[in-house]
Length: 274
Image (tube, rainbow, N blue to C red):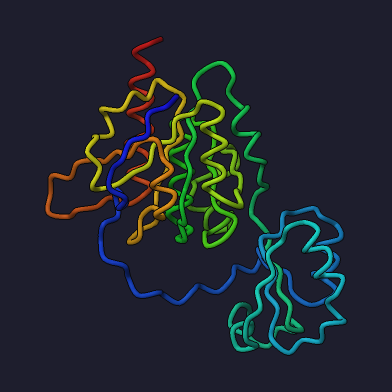
């Protein structure tokens, strides 16, 4: 049975105080479909993964019933927002009819596809807990691809998905890295443990340095969001927490830099066994 480490819960690499929420950028035109019939046809065709649907308050429910039914059947998130918010998401004067659908820039896989993707050597998986900046996610995907890790798992909610900005920031890595969504990260962690994959969280207050962990074992690295770090239960459910020691005046690293450092340490250790 794995030994459960008890260590502090703050995240590793982004220890700056929480920042004030910034206005969300407007949607990129080629990631968006708007209008009742276009959105409905997009859902019917099922050619691209729909990230979410935004519906303005006051839109007549009966006109959207089929949209709601298909979205529910396929697990597509539907957000209710004000008419003013919808207006700001696309070009001025666009006839959105109170409905906008956001499509993913790349397709997702199931978590099991990542678990089972590497049967010849120990698993190396990255889990992101609430990363909301698309450029950070894109940069993490680039590090994951360059390190040859098995894939990335992100939460279904309260996290950025595979937007066009993510795709551009990944420098093409989004085409090669398997990305899955998990409804509940804590259940995902339990699943990983059942598969004998060690779950290694990141915390600036951890007692174990990242290069002291034996990365030759099947491992999943859990990285938290800037400012807030890992959620409490996620941190508690990890097998161990590790840190990257800081030597300068700034006490944190960007999450993509942290991911790269740890992934290539794992590769360094594993290369010694080959």
